[in-house]
Image (cartoon, rainbow, N blue to C red; front, side, top):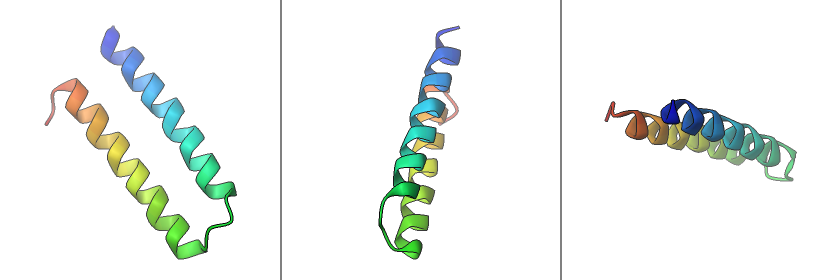
Length: 53
């Protein structure tokens, strides 16, 4: 049950971070790279907490 809570919190924070990055006045290629890095970090965090990595 606790891993489910961690995953939900991580996904909510990822969504908020992606929204903030999308709304910031950063040039498009850099914005895309930052969003990609955020998604990769979230996947690694969730995988690490779930015991996949």
